[in-house]
Length: 317
Image 1: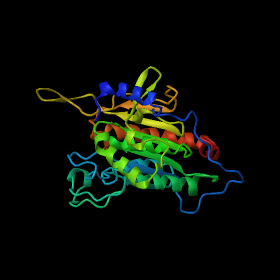
Image 2 (image 1 turned 30 degrees about the vertical axis):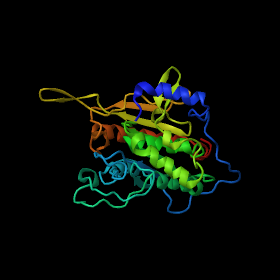
Image 3 (image 1 turned 90 degrees about the vertical axis):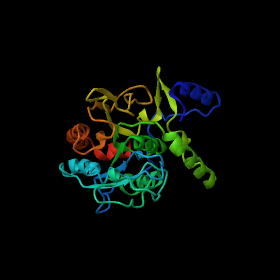
């Protein structure tokens, strides 16, 4: 991974080469005309797509797993919506480009009693779910499904890339749990480049392998995972504490998210940031301070949805 000190230089070189990261100034509006119809029976009010982070190992990303589902984090968020009378469907994925079978089980991430890691979904599978939801449950619907992107650590890089790749899809809520770029490029860059080369074309409107590039917003440089795109209505961001107090002194909490998220125009509209006393790992625990803050906010989120004309809000983000 390129040191932070060199990222501004790299961004300048990319700009001079004509391939610097670019942003949409406004969300792309889904093309639809005609009367709105209800969603199909059995489709959810809320779809949660959750991306977990990196494994505590030297063999990422092959041994990255979805831990937000077995940990109970996704269930806790879903329960907060269900308590407001909404139906929820959830899916979880590992911090990996595509589906894979881990070679080693990381017990702390797999959950109690699980000794063999099951097959894991990745970014491509989550992208397919997002596109299908847009097609079947959102465009042209009088009661469109609300999309919630939930992620921790490296997973935040993936969910921000997902929102950026599909500006036509309205994201009602993005939840970022201490997103970091450290080691993301070394884990994923070559894998993504090999996939694009094998495919014969780039399926995304930007270089996905460059999803941790540094970009200038106003007078500050941000990693792309700190940028909230126009198709995201609300972003709830949690940052972990800077230091952990231990006997005999202080121990650094590393990594941690250091910058408050921003819109491409430099504003913080629709972004709420909370500095938790949890560590980087614990911000994803369902009973931790971070998740308590998130769950408290969700009642306000749902109230806002009910006070807004949902069809207008969702089909013309």
